[in-house]
Amino acid sequence: MLFHVAALWALQSGLLRRAAEVVIPVEILSEFIEPPKPAEPPPPPPEPPKREVTKTPPPPRPQAIREPKPTPAPNAPTGSIEPPPPPAPIAPPAPAEPPAPPASPPAPPAPKLVEISQGQTQYIREPRITYPAMSKRLGETGTVVVAVYFNSAGLPKRAEIFKSSGYDRLDQAAREAAMSSQVTPIRQPGADEATVYLLKAPFNFTLSQ
Image (cartoon, rainbow, N blue to C red; front, side, top):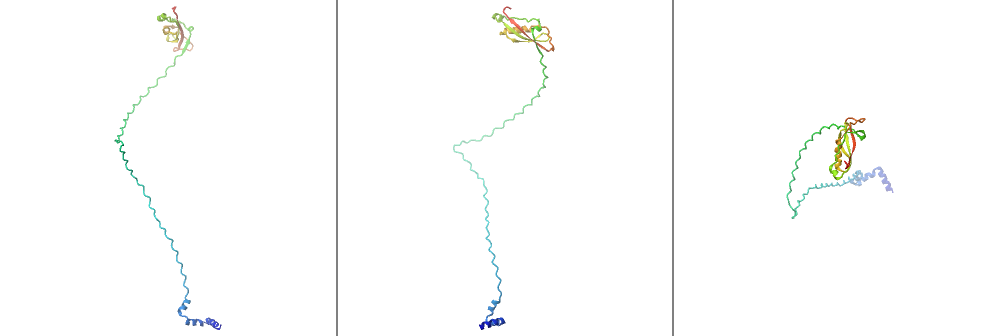
């Protein structure tokens, strides 16, 4: 115990340090006195592995494939191609139509027609009736009514069969008789020189004539 107390006091007074320098080699003291070395920095993290980029080759361009010419069948008919027919000749244009003639003047209005009776006029020249001989021989009789168209002077312009006797020979004889007649000049209110007068004249054919 006394030894420990003396050592403690020697350390405090520096005696122990001197004794240590004599006993402990210089190399050991230098290890105690050398300051600690700074800590080495940690090694850098390893670089990530580089990804190798593989370039995809472009797709091959489509190439036209020439189809082999079909070989004709052994029994297929062969022939030459006829040339197309020549184009049809172009017809010359039709000549232009001549201009239309100028319009004709309008027709004059139809004459006024007035129907009269036998009491409104009288014959100046009686109809000349001729009985057809063949009709007498065959016994043809009958009455024919003829529509006679007179002008204002009383002259017949035309005659038409209004009612037939049933025999063509008698009808034709009555029409000829009407055209041979003449009546007195006719005057009607509101009529003029162009007015036509219609008279329905009967003609009788009997065997007593």
